[in-house]
Length: 103
Image (cartoon, rainbow, N blue to C red; front, side, top):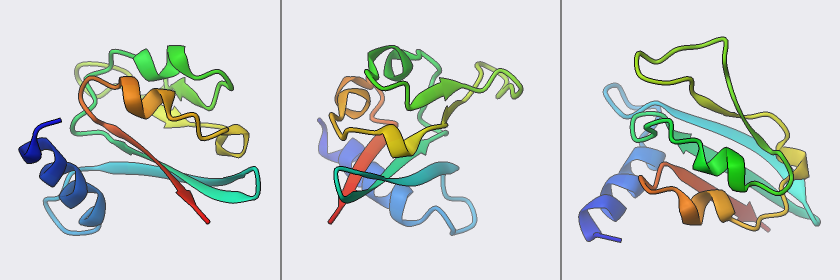
């Protein structure tokens, strides 16, 4: 992972509330007694849907009711089922997903 992409990832996640910062979708839940948060950086997601296909617990889905101009966005629909395997995060070619286990 390049340092530039890492810096932008950290900045995009931390500054989501700042005007002009990337749009970030986040969901919280619990997995094995740990709080889980899944953050999707919509500005980096290109809609390849790899994350949806590799999730063994169907935590992520494609929101077919919305259109970004290039793809349907990914949404976290069942964060409580997340087992924190991080398949979505590890296989995302654009580093657009971050899975955080808090606890």
